[in-house]
Amino acid sequence: CSFCFWIIFFQKEKKWFCGGNMSIAITLKKVHKNFKIKREDDKSLFGSLRDSLYLKNCYEKIHALKSIDLEVKKGEILGVIGPNGAGKTTFLQIIAGIMRCTKGKVLTKGSILPIIELGSDINPELTGKENIFLSGVVMGLPRRFIKRKYKELVDFSGLKKFINVKTKNYSSGMRMRLAFSILLLSNPDIILIDEVLGVGDIRFQKKCFEKLKKWSNEKKTIVFVSQDMTSIKKFCDKAIFLNKGSIVGYGNSSMVVKKYLMM
Ligand code: ATP
Image 1 (cartoon, protein in one colour):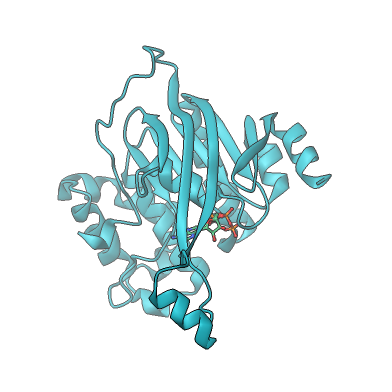
Image 2: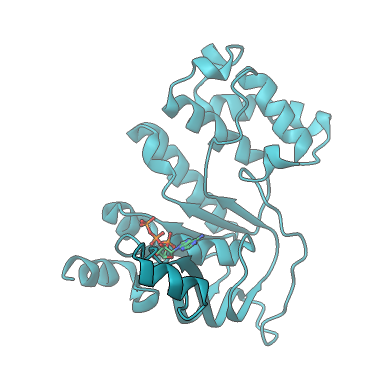
């Protein structure tokens, strides 16, 4: 069902055991990802003639990821930084299984929760409460379980006053609060986050980071893409610096951020 697709995408039991090392949650081995994009048309008479005779390759190859080798330990929080177009989203989508790599291998252990387009599946015609229950049902959770978690979710969202209001009347920050709170229904092993926490206010962001830290203490693995270098330094154990599809920095998050800022 598409409603839940971007909120939660469980990859139950995608277990490729990585050389028997149980402490590794994610392994990427020589991962490449290429995209083909159509070249600008040559509109001259000669260009049209050449295209129609197939004398020119009309497609250009984009190397979004190049030979990525990486291991992420269970319970580790890995930051992913780099300039626009460096390959950060592609990297997350490949780990999530939303996209396949062109070459190489991606090995993951356990269920994956990609938080990539947070809030895009909130139904504007339903209230906050109805959205919570619908999402839970779509996730395959029993109604009794959703009822039990409901108060915790609403308290976390801080939306008690608005929970019976249609979400089309929410602000973007409120929608994001609701969407993030709905994720508390899930119990993933790996959480992938793509720059989605920036919409919430400082207090809610703090709550989200505390929740993510708690998940990490429970040995859940977190991969976090952000342009907010303060959060990367404060929150991540390690970081990778991607540039033009390659890892050009890896290690302690403060060191990697320093390298990125000197670029
Ligand atoms: P940003 O910080 O701007 O979000 P990013 O680091 O997340 O960028 P990606 O979105 O992973 O970068 O894109 C990496 C490269 O791959 C870019 O050159 C982009 O144009 C290309 N790319 C990504 N998705 C596609 C696609 N579906 N088709 C063609 N090219 C793509």
